[in-house]
Amino acid sequence: MGRGSATLRGWLLGLCMGCRAESSPAVAESVTPGVGSPARLIAMGDVHGDLDAAIDALMAAGVVDEEGRWVGGSVRVVQVGDQLDRGNQERALLAWFDRLTEEAEAAGGSFRPLIGNHETMNVALDPRYVTPGGFADYADLASELSEPLRSTIRPDAQGRVAAFRPGGVEALRLAAHPVIAIDSGMLFAHGGVLPVHLEEGIDAINREVSDWMRGDRPDAPSISGPDSPVWTRAYSQDPDDGDCEDARRVLDTLGLERMIVAHTVQEEGIASACGGRVWRVDVGLSRHYGGPIQVLEFGSGDPTVRAGSRRKSAW
Image (cartoon, rainbow, N blue to C red; front, side, top):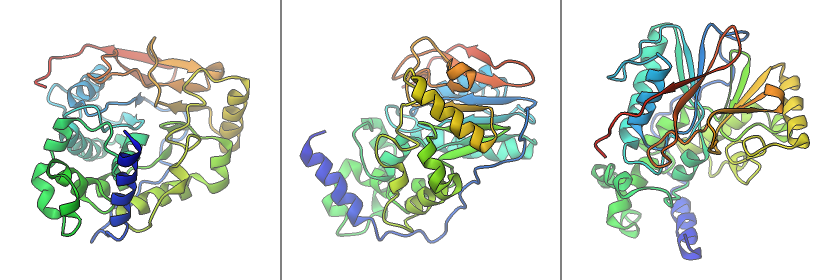
């Protein structure tokens, strides 16, 4: 994107700063039940608008059937961010994630999607990775934009802006998801948690981002910049000794054993770093990347990679 496009994104975001939601879902807390060794916990990486691949991955884990219905019982699943962009099934994917969350809870398990950098980009009205299908999928919401905002946005993007601007229907959906989560004695973040993030606090970061997505605050500085929890690649791109020391400091401070990150495609599949204390689960499983269908399972023994096959898609 050129400088003019970046300026337009900032201008559009500024116009939406006053948009507020009539009702606001609560942001998920960072700490959930199940601290300690889980019976089964599944970590899944970036899915980028590919509902088919997401179903394939969770079928490999044994927690959904071919129709995408929860069959995992008490299993816990964390999807480590980046549900959006690069694919044409985003709207269906987000709705399915909501359904899975309800079905898993009713069965005694859990399904938790996290916020990744592509979720924050969409709420910031940064469309650089949105596909033509991703715009068309929200065209029916264009009428929800009031003038004069509507007249400033090209017709094919109006519905998308209505859905994802702060306070929009999809932004409200995302506002219920945490940026950082602790589940079953493990730490999850799309990019990773650095020592500096502990100064603000995990719950404070989650609340700030949720408030911004709901339209209750003008920005969310905690997720801005290359060292934010959704953008850092310190742990996902061959961490050096200093990065591993940071991971150790964070985990030891929180009394946790492992950190699970995504954000950077692992060309050889799911991998560990820092003596097994960091696990990297982005394998490019979406059709855009064409990577393997893999998820990571934690249980009573060593972490295990569960692999599946990719079914054909209509898009």
